[in-house]
Amino acid sequence: MPDADAAAKTAMVGLDGVTPALQARSQATFDALIHAGRRVMGAKDFEAVRIKEIARTAGASIGAFYGRFANKEVFFSAIQEITVADIETDMRALLTRPSTGLAGDSEFLFAVASFWVGFYRTHRGLYVASFKHSRTRPGAWTPFKRLGRNLVSLVIMQLAPRLQRLGKTKTERDVRIAFQFVNGLLVNAVINDPGPLSLDDAELELSVGRFLCAYFGVPAIAEGKKNRRKPTGGRNPKRKATS
Image (cartoon, rainbow, N blue to C red):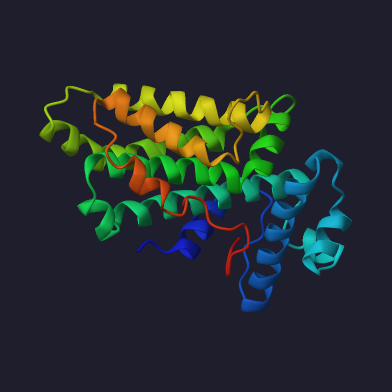
């Protein structure tokens, strides 16, 4: 299974303004601050959050914050990069699970749909904050664009042989277009919640699964089975290390 902590640490390499944690105690403080940032973004507008509130939520001092992050902008970027690394690691874990490889074609697509909806639910606060930030900060949405491309590339590695076996002539571009629709739907659900399905509606992941099956011409025979499974995708914002 991929090393989640290593992936998150790698995400910090080259990020200006972040001081790497060199000791376990320093790492614990870094993790607590990241977790606190995720929590406050789930509860209020990040622009209105003050550094002392983040530090207080983390059980750390303002000095400890500045000892690890140059400013709130850098902190925001760190949260984005760690979150993106987490989601990619979790997707790799899902796709390398023996049960995923043995799943039927429609069950595979429903598992991917459940994961996709799941990480939007888990990290909705960060998506909202990034969307608002993108109005004044060019590139604020870039980590999520990169995430989308990378996740689809991972899915293609398992989906392409399945489609070929079924005699489907879908190209890589076709797969990326399918997930462009999925991402558009979920971003709209996060930002605007237009209905009739909300992000928390259990029917949403089933609808995404049905769409993927219809798009790729795969009979949705796993729908009932998926309806009995616990949704996946996107770990809890609180993690043991680097999150």
